[in-house]
Amino acid sequence: MGDYRSVYHQSLSDPDAFWATAAEDIHWYKKWDKVLDASNAPFYLWFAGGELNTCYNAVDYHVDNGRGDQLAIIYDSPVTDTQRTITYSELRDLVATFAGVLRDQGVSKGDRVIIYMPMIPEAAIAMLACARLGAIHSVVFGGFAANELATRIDDAKPKAIVSASCGIEPGRVIAYKPLLDGAIDIASHKPAKCVILARPQANAELQAGRDVDWHKAAAAASPADCVPVAATDPLYILYTSGTTGQPKGVVRDNGGHAVALKWSMKNIYDVDDGEVYWAASDVGWVVGHSYIVYGPLLKGCTTVIYEGKPVGTPDPGAFWRVINEHDVGVLFTAPTAFRAIKKEDPAGDYLKKYDLSKFRMLFLAGERCDPDTLQWAQDMLKVPVIDHWWQTETGWAIAANVMGIDPAPVKAGSPTRAVPGYDVQVLNEAGEQVPPGDMGSIVIKLPMPPGCLPTLWNNDARFVDSYLSRYDGYYLTGDAGYIDADGYLWIMSRIDDVINVAGHRLSTGAMEEVLASHPDVAECAVIGAADALKGQLPLGLVVLKAGVNRSDDEIVPELVKLVRDRIGPVAAFKQAVIVKRLPKTRSGKVLRGTMRQIADGETYKAPATIDDPAILDEITGHLKELGYPRG
Ligand code: COA
Ligand code: AMP
Image (cartoon, rainbow, N blue to C red):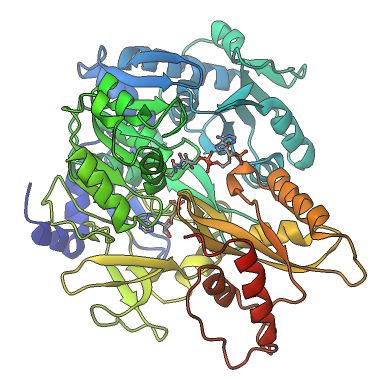
């Protein structure tokens, strides 16, 4: 505990001393030469010259320090009706053996490995096995279609892919192997080997010479030791949506990442070694990387891998059951999960069935947390409910109520103040800081703290162009908002074409590229319309080519299917409207913002430069018929 202001001030006035102290908590084979190497700014390097192994710190270290018999992982899967526990000793053996399997497939330090897995312990084991060898993993979320997987294969050029025979969604088994085979067919880069975990719910046809069975390979493998890597070597690549169909390969280093995440477990989440920490997310997202796998394991906690949903598996009491059965102290999830629970159990009747006396805190992130949801969660759970704000690029919270340092009063709708290490500012168009309360572009003054992305995979130019070129010396978060007089941040909207659907970050630009590929489509726009459950849902507005006289009822389902097939079910693209024209300025800029305001029932003012104001009335009429606004 300490005083927020002094800790924050110290982190910015002497970052070297601040992070060197935090780094003492990590096991190093060789200490760093320099805490922060700024010699090649804006490409900053943390702990340059240092050598460590992230898997050693997350697994073996605890076995070597007396935690071998403690649970590392609790797997709880209502969709398969199974539970499994893994101690730190068992985890070390499983990871070392699987690292041996990967090594047998030719994987070594610096090689990329794509992991396309459902929420099972083997997903974490595969990630840690890569880290053990110094190989770079890239986990792809199971709800993405073959095409998205192919894009990532071509960018990361993996030597091997690790997958499973299936994932399980409520009511349906998703065979992964056809998706994987399809992706490899589409991709120009071909991985040498695929390791496939057979699950009882689906068979996977193995391709001779390329595919190997996880268990058979593990039975034949010998355990691999941890390979020391440079602090600045990449640990993983995680692709995230940008403004185009080409996702951005966010790179995470080993040293800064381990230091920042371990520091965050105590200082932000106020969690101690030995506690049960549960992030109800998916290993395919950054929350899963940081707070299902690396953060809790680095800290010596027990992490929960939950294969289920907040509702329907089997009921809205699912989260309370898990907390109760496994003595969860801290839960981290997205506000959408709580909106879903609230919708089905507004009075909290399911909650009353469980003993939550060990439960201490709820953290929410991934999307804006509306005050109603925060209030409801507080009323029901009677524990602190903490909104915090971050993104794939940073890997850990930029703004939060730092519960392990100095808890601050909660203001519903704000993720509280900048986390130590982050110099968060709000700038106007001209790059000047705005006064408290004024909206602007939210930026982080460089250098960012350890753990944040050093660059994009194989694309320094895009890194600079996307994040550093707008304001010299600052990282552009892509979010807009303001800082109030008490220093609290308010995140209000994105400044780009990224939307947030059920806490999942998606690119409307990528969906537009898919719609535009339909033979009948002349042009299109996709906007994120407010949705009471998922925060936002994509909505397509489509203009057909001249001469096409097929009905909307024929074309719209084709468009919906196209997005589902190309991007995946996670896009939740279910609605498109055929319009005569898209509203544009006279210079041809599509007025997506105005269309979003119409869909959300907001009052809007068409720009003076609009080429045909009448089109807005047509769109308003169409959207009313479809039941908008729905927020
Ligand atoms: N593999 C395959 N398909 C998947 C998938 C996966 N791993 N995850 C989701 N999908 C599918 C779903 O089955 C659904 O398909 P459908 O259109 O056929 O119904 C679609 O993708 C959309 O999924 P989802 O956004 O999960 O919506 P849902 O309606 O199934 O569930 C909630 C709604 C609110 C319960 C769910 O969104 C949720 O749990 N949200 C929490 C958010 C979260 O964990 N975010 C992570 C960041 S912290
Ligand atoms: P992702 O990279 O998928 O984690 O998405 C990051 C984006 O989600 C941020 O840039 C924000 O737009 C949004 N986001 C995440 N957490 C919050 C939050 N607590 N409040 C508001 N927006 C958030």
